[in-house]
Length: 565
Image (cartoon, rainbow, N blue to C red; front, side, top):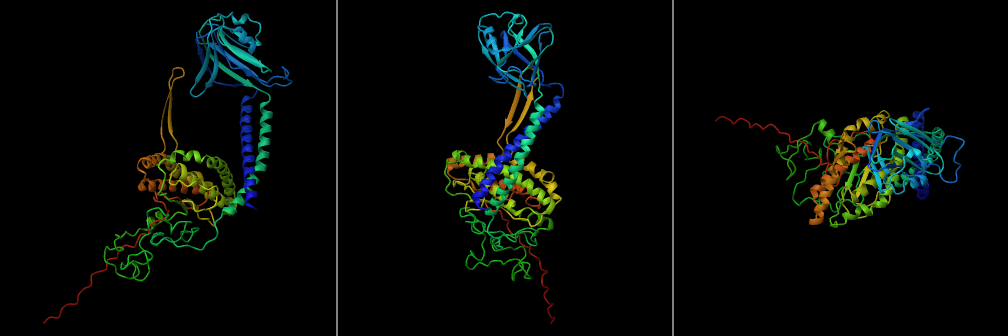
């Protein structure tokens, strides 16, 4: 399948699936509402509305619209209002009338219009309309469509009809200062039929959209797949700890990232350890473990000595070797040595096209991950085209994050592609030939929970605490932020603005946090069964230094006894 056709299918599949999902969610919500309604009303909580004017009016209620018969053969909806004066024994009035009649009645009268009501915490906003006139008692007017007046709780019901209407709450004598407890309710015979229609429509849209989305993702995943390469050796002096064998499903070694020299970017500032390709002339270089003359190959090194100029590293045990094992999801980031001092101020704006595309790609990522989960559950394999597509989405997201907000490590604009390029930020995940069928049920939520808590602490959004006081409309909110990762990036770019330098240790730490996040993403997205390590591998390249064998102490040679004279 051609790449253009795959992209079109993916776009159509995403759009149709998103509409279908929204319609399905609306149908489900309407079903819940209709079931809760029963033969009664859906009732709101009681709210206290208080104004210092003669009357409180609602905004216009365009119930059905112009040109529609005032009464329909079915119940469009019925509104129920209950109101009680906050002052015991005081009579209150509630009524519904055409908007023109209400405006004529309250013309020149000081009254208030309710604009907006927030439920949590409760807060009402009003528009004050000044006036000097005194209204006639509202119950004596004849233009009300329905009304109720008297002491205690008053209730009215009104069948929605065409036209513009207003609800009015007043003191029964029209005096100043309206203070009432109000509750609203609603019922309609159209809720359940509408819910059924939404559910059916959403299901049809998903039945059409998801196959298109999957076919498009499969086609793009095949185009994004890397060309097959033979096993590549790790950079000199780097690799898994001694004695640690390759885990099932791991690539035999690390490949070389495009544009990188053996795992090092052109401007990282870190050269590979001294080895045969870069050794100082005349300096002895230790060979690999097990090689002739290397530690552990039968030679007797000097006790406590390591490589020339490098202290010996204690030999880890089996548990330590497992903890230090390279994870098969690798993140790279190469710091641009010529970063602009102030371009980071507008990168978030320049990256808006990427943000829009990523919204749709992440939706496709969620759908393809669910499909892949079922495939793993029944076959034990992650479909390779979907795997390559999802890795491409993570790669795309990391490029944009590295450019704009999660590192700000380059001024080079990210490419619009899922495939690997020579961009200075990249992400790779080794394809697993076999995955556990049982783990797919628990690893994305239960097993990953410790990591998700840590990731939330490292990259979570602003924390907010909220308390409500007992008096009307008073609330106290406190918030603190940004996240730790956002704070570190902010410190780095502000230092760049004033000094012209991006602090290398800070960059390494930021890359370590991002590396942890993306390992957890790969694990929770069912791409690997190996549990992510609890470690912060800092630096631009995701490689581990090789630990050397501990020096072995040889028993001192005993001199032969000297011959007695």
